[in-house]
Length: 417
Image (cartoon, rainbow, N blue to C red; front, side, top):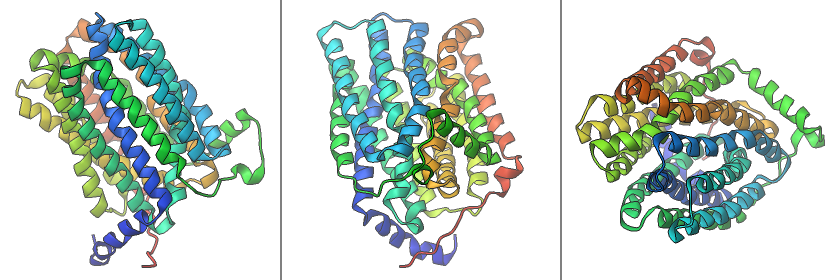
C-alpha cells in the first residue's frame, strides 16, 4: 500500500459512515447477521434432538437451501424493479414471524422433523427475496469514492456479529435448548426491519423506465453475467465449493465435532471461522491490491484447511486454526469479489447479477447436503473430508490461471477529502 492510500483510509471510513442510509444499512445487516449465526447451530441440534439422522439433517438443510435457489432470481428482478429497502424491510418482518413460529413449536414440544423442514423452506424463500436487494444496496448508500471502504466495513461488521452469534449459539442451545435460541433470531430480524425502514435512497429505475417481462429481465441479467468472463467462471468455481463444502458445514461438521469433542466445540469452531473472517476484513481495509480478484482467488485456496483439520486431527486447537484459516482466505476473496461486481456492473442490473451470482453459487448446495450423509457412510467421514478439501483448494488454484481473473484491476476513485 502506498503512503497516500494509508493516509486516506480513515477519511474513507468516516466518509462512508457519514451517510445515514449506510449507517442504517449496516446496523440492520449486522443485527440480522448475529441472529443468523445462531440458527444453523440451533437447527442442527433441534433436528438431532427430534431423533433425526445425518441424512434427515441433510434433507432439512437442503430444503432450506433449495427454497433459496428457487426464489433468488425472482428476488433479483424485484430488487431492480422495486425500492430495495422496502424489499429488505418486508422480508425481515416476515422472517421474524416464521422464526418465531418455529421457536414456539420447538419450545412447546409440537415440532417434528417435517414441520421444521417446511418452516425452513418458507424462511429460505423470504430470505432469498431480499438477498439480491441487500447486496445491491451498498452502492446506493455511499459516494463512489467510498465504495471500497463501505463494502469492506459492511462485511467486517456482519462477520463480527456472526462471531458473537456462533459463540452465543452453543451456550444458548446447551443452557436453554434450540427453540429459545431460534427465538433470539426472530427478535433480531424484527430489529433489522426497523433499521431498514430508516434507509432513504433514490429509487433505481430498471432499463430507463422500460418494464419488460419477467423472462426478459432475467435474460438481460444473464446477458450481463456472460458479458464478463471472470464473473461466470468464478460463479462456476463457487458452485463446486458449495456442492462439496455445504455438506461439510451443514451435516458432517456438527456430527464429527460432537463425537470428537462436544456440542459446544462446534460453536467454537464456527466462532473461529468467523474470527478468520474478521481478520480478513481488517486486512482488506488496508490491503487494496491492484489485481484484487486475482489475489483474493489465491487466498480462497485456504478454505481447504477446515475440512482437513476435522479429518486429520483430534486436537481442538488445530481444528480452530483450520477454521480460522478458512474464514480468513474466504473473506479476502469475498471482499474483492464483491467490489469487482459493484465496480463493473450497471446499477440497474446489479440486483439481477447478484441473484445469478447467488443462484450459481448455491444451486448445487442442496444436492451436496442430501448426498453428504450417504457418501460419508459409504467411504468414511474422514476420507470424504479429505476429498472435499482437495477439491476446494485445487479448484481455487486452477481459477487463478484464468486470464480474465489475472488481469481484472480494481478501479481507484480519488477521494475529494
